[in-house]
Length: 407
Length: 229
Image (cartoon, rainbow over all chains, first blue to last red; front, side, top):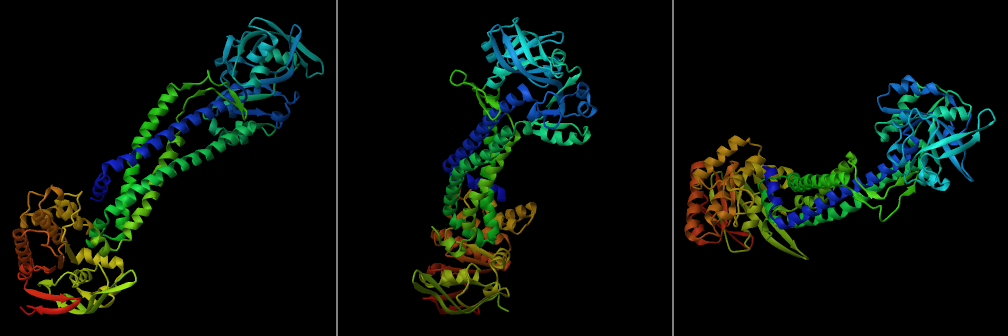
């Protein structure tokens, strides 16, 4: 019956309750949408950094990610280490050999980073195959095919089918050089990759560097990128001591900081928005309690204890919060779904921005993340209860004699 | 042993910097089953006396003992529990909860007493039949006449089987016919169920219906007739 009373009390002043409810629903729904869009932006950034180049996990010699030492090579068989092969969290493993050198076409040369890869394995880890603007991704049977960035192609004035010369230092001290044929051109929006990165077949680069059967790293993709650090921690004890398994948070510390800062800013945004909402709730319930002073006196005269009076008002705020939460979550989910499926393309207005190792793409699209629903939902209920506490306390502290006399 | 005892009870209210004496050295006793009226003009202390007997207020000095409990030394929680178990209130303006139906208004006390749903429904059904308001259970107070609302208020006061029912000017908002009916009803409940009724009034027609009349003037006892009847 208390629940019935609380629910009916909510609707005594329908207009006021609906206005407060609307404010709560709109704030919750917009917050969910905004957080979904933020998450989408950061997911894009993380994907641009990890899924276009780094991978989520990298197995290499200790310090290799800092020094990129040509001689810090490993046997290519490491890609099939049982610990990696059998890990359910890992969905792709790609062996890579890395070289830095000059790429030339006629009288133009550019410094480049060249990754030797096995195409079908690399495509399980990174997604440059989805960023092609011309040509095709190198195939397994291609001996010297190269996938190069759009900026680099522009500087060297090459198109698919054109030949290039790659010159670098080989592991035996000689000058390694050979011909490459452009098979495809990619554009990620990240200038560092688009202007410098070249992918070529692993056996070709092993031959150029005189590093037969050797690789520098195994790049891996995991099912949940946010869980990469935990996967690395779990697998590290199962790996040989001379190897280091790094997650993207270590490879890209600035990206990790950006995401951590996002978590903090999400709480700040939620707090600011709900502070305003909370004041609205507070006003509504103060009015409601003041209008019902005599009734509270009557309930006290009937023997209702002060804590029960407090509980009744808190129950009303909690009910209002729950209704707002249900409708707000639904509206927020629908708007997020729309932004996930359709989104807004801003390519005509802004260009991609590289920031903290990732690329902010010129598009607004949202992703579903439990935290983007749980935080606004939990906070809305907390704010409702907190905003209801002051009026509830006032009602509980009423003097029954004075309350009964109140007009 | 008397059911209600007031020993030298004084009540002083503070209104800003002024002190107003509402009751002064009042001593009274009520036996179980009495049907008594506190009579007197406005400001004579009738409502204050009812509030003290009903544990809604505490005396400034003196002792109020109801059903062997000294209300001056009880905690707020004990007073709330005492009201719940032993006191029923009827107010001048009925003061029903507008969002509850008539039956729910009467049931509320039983709900606070943690009586299960089925027996409390049955109790309210019988009370409504007894009070002649059966059929009005599902109506909201706004859909009832003043007399009907006051009967629902009586049902609410009676629902918890209290030892004492206190009524503050219960007929003040009723026409003479409805007031007479209400008084007859209260008298019947007092006679048949033995419930003690103490009510206040300044209306001589109502006062004349009481078996005992306690007259108050300026917070002091000015007369007590019919005590031994």
